[in-house]
Length: 140
Image (cartoon, rainbow, N blue to C red; front, top):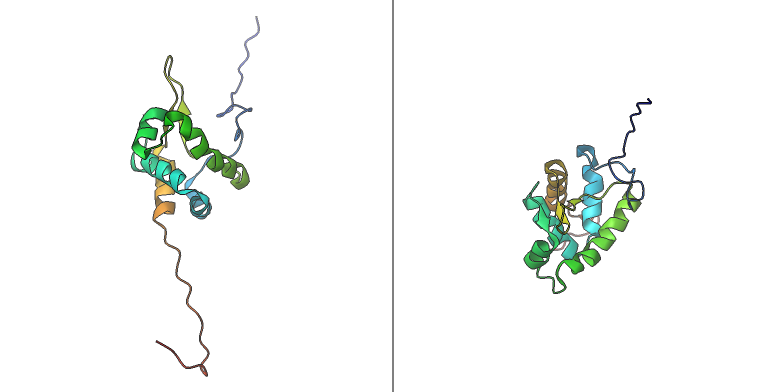
């Protein structure tokens, strides 16, 4: 008899982001840049997940909270570009999902990832101030 142990990847290899690193606390600047690229509906969706870490929502619940007319089917379009950006940024999807037996998909953010993106959401870039030469009069 042969006894074999096989390590399974954390995400399936055929996942769009399979085998990419997960978001971590050292990704704050990356998360801020990622956040700025998100559309308004994606930011709204992420905000629900950020504000309720570890809480699992069905697609229908999220669509209702966001006022998406197409129900859970609308989430595909809202998550499309954020998913593509993950490949560009070299990270896994920041949201987690599962399919409980006999149910539709549920989505959530882990507490760690929610905190990273909460900070990114709340970050306000410094305003640029125009440099003025000493010879140039200052105008109000």
